Length: 101
Image (cartoon, rainbow, N blue to C red; front, side, top):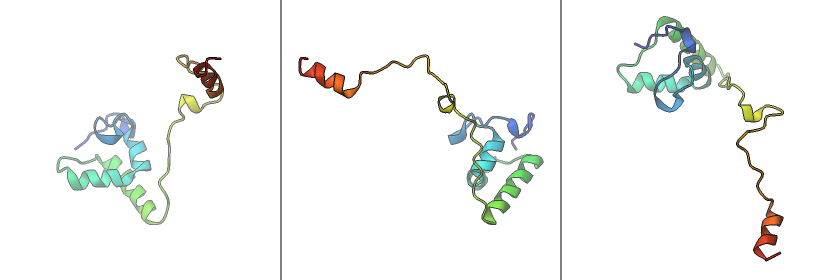
């Protein structure tokens, strides 16, 4: 059984959702948790997590879509400038250099 000492905020340590927390996985892809139950005999959730997962599966069966809860990425935030970003020449400048201009 997977224990959650920090609740559902514990980080997944394996698989395609490595580094996400379990709450995010359950809310965004409850079918992945279902797949884990079906394909890994050692996988189990504690009572609280199992309840959240069951409720999410019931909501999905009732027609509610997955609920994306993706944290915003820095690059998507206004006024973000990557310190490692280099201005690349635009295509017209590149073409001029190739033609000896």
